[in-house]
Image (cartoon, rainbow, N blue to C red; front, top):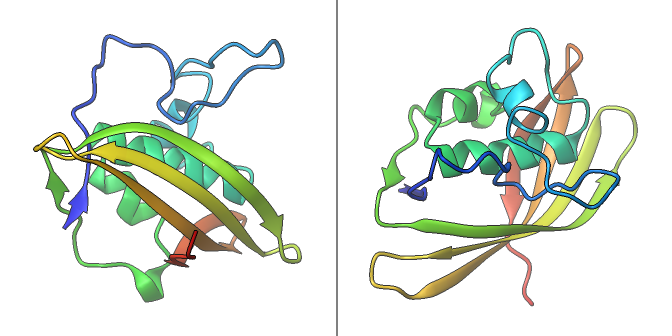
Length: 144
């Protein structure tokens, strides 16, 4: 089961936490919303932007976007969400391009489960660009 938070649509800040050049939080529309809401017309320009938009899709419970941005050879048949999980934040530790069409992004996503216990998801995700679009391939969970 994939966990997702209870998202408060009243907040206009993007859940991914990306900041503007003035160090102010970007709005959902300025940040991940343009990729999530306009997938066909505005794909994420790089692996980090795709990873951030996928985190935001988890927070908002958007299974369609998650499946659409999963590389076909690794895509599950569906995504299930845990309504008891609350996502608390995202820290991108590294975005590493590996040539023009491959990249890795290491991140830590924090969450709290229905019982109030805090958890950290530390993942090094792999991405591939096909037909001008970035896709999530898979990830591994480094120690530390």
